Length: 301
Image (cartoon, rainbow, N blue to C red; front, side, top):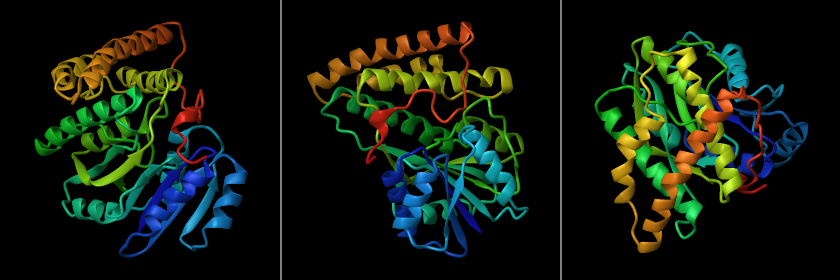
């Protein structure tokens, strides 16, 4: 059984597109698609626009993405390690080969957790779109290397998959795409980067939304120091400098992009400093559905 979990937040049109991207695929065997959203109007929109017995709606209690995933792991988990959970979001959509590529990767019994390949749909002709392309290209390079070397790395919450029957829950105080891979790693499983399984992402297009999204991500990752201090970190301030500085300088293709790269460095520094300051003042990561709605990442709604 393949269970596809799409967590969304009041973005019905985009969520319909996310569901349809899976329904168009040739999925061998039994599968279910669960849309998890805290708004009843999204359920009505889904049921009106999608007539398929494999698509189910679950009204989320509104406690956060990690809470919702824990709930589904326990309700629909199994002891069969050949069964799979595939997780993605309602504001993104996947490539037509995604499920087949994930199944192919799981043929290796040592693989317990798989991450897909996020692709920004933003234009490089604007600064925030360029920043998205730069950041995604950097993490793509890192994941390629670590996956090839069979070393630990964190996954992407935009698209990742796990074997059922290995873990039934995980801590809520950090991002699921960081802690879940590590729980598999501790049990002796490897992490794989299935880069042919692509997921298309709309990123923030203004300073307010960009900063809010990134600060929330930093806070989630900093909580790992408390939850699993021994966990190898692939996303951190120092790793970003070590692995990304020179790569960033060579990424630009024009004078304008090079100038945007130079602006990217102080923006990232400010984002980290603000995140650490807020944490110090007692404003920790919160797994609520969004502390601040990131309006510019809603592609259709």
